[in-house]
Each structure stands twice: as C-alpha cells, then as structure tokens.
Length: 177
Length: 411
Image (cartoon, rainbow over the protein chains, first blue to last red):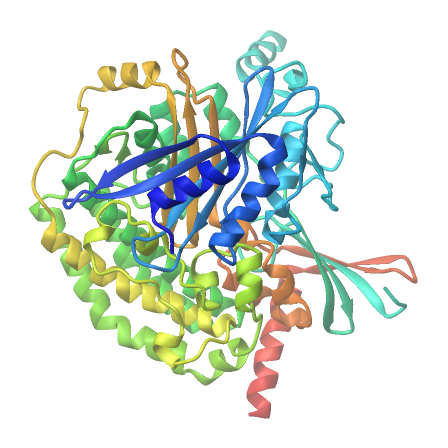
C-alpha cells in the first residue's frame, strides 16, 4: 500500500512528469479523497501503465475518455489501485495527447484484456489507431458505418449530414400538407 | 471450427432481460464452445448531446435517462464530477439525502433483479413474490422524491428536495417492512432446492478472470474481489456509515463465483442497504440542502468555470464513472464520458458461458444484471444445409423450464 504523497513522488520521479492532485471532502467528518492526474508523453505511456502494475497486481481499468482539442486529441485512462481496503483506494488517471495527424497509441489489451471494448469504442468514435489491438470491428456503431466519419470529433470528419434536425423536418411535413 | 459446430446468434433482443444485445454462440450439441458479444443496437449518443446541445443542469436530467433503473447513480455521478471540476462543496445534509436515495434505489434494483432471475429459471411464483415486495420500495420512493422512476432529486451542489419528518417516517416504515420480510426472501432464494440446482456451479467466473476483465459490482464481489466504491473511496455519507464490501464467503464460507454466489451477494446487499438507510436517517445532520440556491447564479458559475472532474458511484450493478471537462464560456461540457457498470461486465460473459449449455444462457446472462439486454428472437444457422430456423424467445424460455423440470425429476 502506498500513500498519496508517496505515489505522486513515484510518478514524478520515474516518469519525469507533472502530477495534478485534486481533493474533495464529503460528509460531516470531511474525509478527503484524492484523484491523481498524470499527463505523460506518448513514449512514456506504456511505462506509466506498467508502473501501476508494480503498485498492484491488477490495477482496475475503468474506461478511456477522449477529448478533441482541435490540433490534438487527449485520451484519459482512469485506473484505480489499492481497492478492497476501506478508504484506501486511489484514482490515478493517465492522460496522453496525440496530434491529429498521427493518431496512434499502443494497446493495453495485452496487459488488461478488459480494455478491449473501450479501445474499440475510441477507435470508432475518434479514429484513434491502437497498435496491436486484434479486434478492430465496430462495437457501438453499426457495421455499415461509413469510413472516416467520427461522431465525437469536432472537425470536418464529424458526420454533420447524419444529425437529425427535428425542427427542419417539422417544416417540411407541414408544407407538404 | 469442425463439422459439428454450429453458430447460434442469440439476440439482438436477448432472452434474459428486455433490452437489446447480441450474442453469437458457437455450439457443439448443447455445449457452448465459442462466444462473441455484439452491442450497438441502442447507442443513443447521450454523451454527444451533453457535449453539443445541453447545458450542465439539463445534462443532469439527461443522465437520469441513461438507464431507467440506475436513475440516481448516473446523475449522482455526473453532479459529483461537475462539483469536482468546480471545486464546489456540498452541504452535509445533502450528502446524507443523496446516500439515502441511492440506497433506496439499490433495494429496488436488487429486488427487480431477483424477480427476473427467478423468472429465467421458470420459478414464476418467486418472480411475482419479489416484485410484490418491490412495490413497497417503489411507493416509498414516490413518496420521498415525487416519482417512482426518474426521481429528479440531484442538483449541482446538493439535492432538490429535503427529507422532512413525514418522509422520514415513511422510509422508516418501509425499512421495518423489509426487515420483517427479509428472512422469507432469504429462505426462498438461498435454501430452495430448485434454485440451488439451477444456479450452483453455473456460469462460474474465477477471481483471476474477474480481475483481468475488470468486472465490477456484485459480479466481481461474488468472485471474491472485494471491490466496492462505497468502501474503497467513500463518497456522500458512506465514510461515516458502517460499510464493507460483501462477498459470498460471509454467508457460506467459500467463494465459488457462480450464479448462486451472485444471488447471495445481492440479497445480503439488500439487507445492508436497509441497515445503511437506518443508520443514515439517525445520523442525518440539519442544515441547508443546496450550496447555491440561485439557479441563474449557478448557471453563470458553470459557464465561467474551467476544469475537469471525475465522479464515481457504486451503482446497484457496480462501479459507475463519469468524466466531465468544463470549458470557459461554453455551456455544454467540452467532454463527457459515461462508463456504466455493464460496459465492464459484458466481457466476463465469455468465460462464464464457455463450456455451459444453451439452456443456461438466460440465467447466466441475467446473473450479471445486464443493463442493456434481453432476448426475443434466436436464429439457428445450419451451416451445412444453409438453412435458417427462427427460434422465438418463448422457445428459449421453454428450454430453460425443461431443464429445471429435468433436474427436479432426477433428484
């Protein structure tokens, strides 16, 4: 078991990156809980995930969240370690930014098979390529979804023509009548 | 795949619960040798709406509609993520009210599941009995929040309605009712011969698989992973309540990781919820229930805010997690990611179903309490003859009933 401060030091020392700690109080006793945001470069991403395995045998992987910032896309991987003990769990979010013209990152499914659905989701919704991901079929989007259209992007690859504009359709119907 | 292997698509509308998910099974006779899961039939783009159309407060009500059963945990999770991003503190009384409402929801969800599970193995008397018991909690929820299903009680910075003396008495009455009836549900589910026959050693998920596939909630706990957000990283009032993760060895002394163990975990959690609610009602402090009462001011705070936050809640089915990122001058979220528990509990279906029988598919699928699945139609493809046979949900259900009867005869 590692304390929060110690954990911050491990990440800062081993990965040479900045760690943001966000705390929140709850209840009458104002017991604090901490969230760690570790933002690393792409080259150090796998190293940071392996570092979590040193802290615990099976770090729990939750999901991948993706944000489109225009020039780049940021992926966030929230992990929890030290679970199973009262009030001891830590939430470590590993973030990595990818430039839009080179959207590639290594898969973590070899370390954590449970990440498959999430990687397939980001692959289809954001167009990020996961190097080494064996199954790249669509998971949430239909099989016949057009190539190169990504619903969570905020650029020209967003399928604008597919959005359902209810108000426009309403006008059409009333005109026909 | 050899000559005797057949592909059996189950779904898109699945036999276990009334929601769409597709299972493609490779079967050799009755035995399942390969499993693939296909989702996508009900992706509604809720995250997209939250990122492009609604403001933060409208998103609370949208989050409530992610799932009809988990309609407290999703908005709870979302407001926690927003408060985390804003650095906003919640009044103590609001923390307690949130906890009580979340636990009321857990009781209703677990009882609903118990009924569905009984129905899947053909024990319809128990199905009706569980759902009759559930009515009491639904009436209480309606009395306390004003609505049976979408409770609309969460708000950024607190809750919208208080639990006054009248409502408190109503909750206490309901809790006494459940304490009175608990031994009967326990007796039916844990000591009945038929239920034990169909669920013991069925759909086993080993601890290692649960950890590798990141299973959450009662599914993971039934396999011996003591993971519960309420215990590990307490939110709301849980840090002050007597909360510990429930594993089946507390009841039977061993962990098998089968469907029976999942029944134990869920039933004990119902009892635990009742105790938690009683404890929370007793310790509930007085004071305000909202940290920012002025709605217009709240909206302007939200619009000016910049930051990111993560909210985590233990939903009845497992850990729920929301990530929210706010951008200055923009009303919708810059980024919103919802991870409902079933998202992680779908992959464990594969090891659970492998080696099992077709008749066990409904109960094994139902045992994870999937939030998005159910069966309506099955097509059996005979690859050699290239013929398609359609099997209805009723046929599948009948097969499940036959297995129960067969086992009872051999007893």
